[in-house]
Length: 342
Image 1 (tube, rainbow, N blue to C red):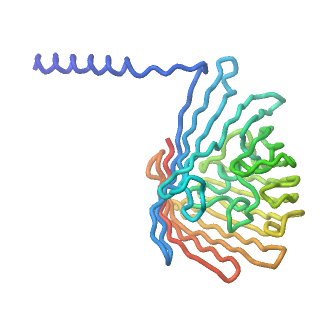
Image 2 (image 1 turned 180 degrees about the vertical axis):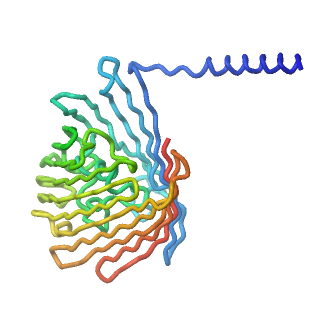
Image 3 (image 1 turned 90 degrees about the vertical axis):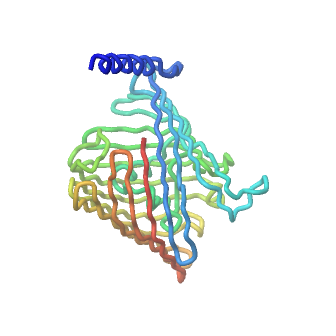
C-alpha cells in the first residue's frame, strides 16, 4: 500500500509539473480569446447525396488592459469552392476558400450607452436576427440574405457601426462601402444601414437566450448608393421585424420591401419562423419565406421543418426538410447537420 501511495504521489507531481509548464503564448494584448464555429452536414435531394462542411470559422479577440471591454477581433471563414465556377489557377476540385469575415476594432462607450466597430464589421441587421430571432444559420441564412429569399444583403462590410444598448431600446447605425465582405469594391457609393429595436419587456443590454422572456420590434433597412454588386444601381430597402420568446417557445415574423433596386433584386415579401422546446434539449422548428419579384411577378417560397437536439453545450444536431420553389421550379432537400462551437 505504501508503494502504491508513493507511486501515486510521484505521478501527481509529474502531472502537475507538465501542466504547469504549458505552452507560452506572447501578446501585447492583456487577454486573448480563441473560438471556433463549424457547420457539418449531409444533404439528400432527388439528384444528389452529399456530405458537406458548410462553414468553418476561426476567431481571435484581443482585449486591452487599459479598457477591458474594448478589443480587436479577427474571424476567418472557410468554405468549399463551387466546382461549377471558373476560378483562375486551374483545378479547383477539393479546394477551399479562406475569407476574412471580420477584422474590426471595437471601442466601448465612445458615446453614452454606445460602442463602435471600425473596420470589416457587422452590418446592423443579420447578426442581431441570428442571435434571438432565427437561431439556425447552420441550415439556412436569414430571410434578407438567403438566395431564394429576399437576397438583398449580407452580414459584414468595411465601414463603421455604432451600437447602442439600453434596457428598452437598442440600435445599430452604420456607414459602409456597400459591397459586402466578398463583393467587388468600386468606390462609387456608400451604404447607410440601420436597426432600431424596441425591447418591450426589457433585456436590451443583454444577449438574447432561449431561457429569457423578451418581445422585440425592429425597424431595419439600407440605403445603398450605386452598388456595384447590384448592377451599379441604388439599393434601398427597409423592413419590420417582431419576435416574442419565452423558455417554452419562440415566434418571429418580418416584412421586407425594396424602394429602389435593380430588377434582379426589386420586390417585397415576408418570413415567419417558430421554435417549440417540447423537451429539455429537444426543439421543433419551422419557417416559411415568401418573396415576389417586381419585374415579372416571379414568386420565391421556402419552407423549413425540423427537429433539433442539444447534445451538450458545444454540439447541436439538426434534422430538417427544406423545400424551395422559384417560379415553376422546385426542389426538396433532406438535411442532417451538426453545429459545433468551442
